Image (cartoon, rainbow, N blue to C red):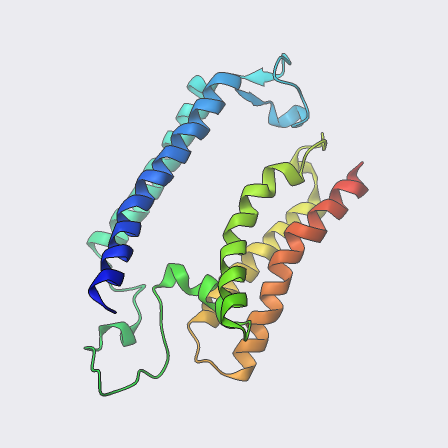
Length: 209
């Protein structure tokens, strides 16, 4: 990489945490102002419904507990097992005279890398990888007008669990060499990933009604 490219990537990595922090503040502000619907009564209530429960202390304590647990796990890996999730190929000193066997991103990029290489076209792979993140922003709008809480929708929970399993499987596929078998497995997993948001959720909503 040339120096201008490295500078741009550094600027992107420096800016993204502030963007994420801004989105988190917007989320907490909206939750604090309007509250949230009571999970046991469903998510279809209006903003003025008496079924709303306040942000403090319920969501504040719940989110604080989750944050502390996540911080504990993160600190454990960072301070005591920092190399567990790293790939051995990433510790090989760069040599411009030797082509690497295959690219091995960091573990948190592996599912998206599997999506990227599951499409032969480079531009298509980049668009697919970007769409896998952008589509998550549409998730709140895909479950509108469904009054039954998620905890009582067993079929929906099954497909959500399958999605999580597929995402972890994509992470494993992304760490494997670029061979036809792994490319096919990555392509099939990528298809299900998008089908879950674009087809399965709308279909389950129709059946729920």
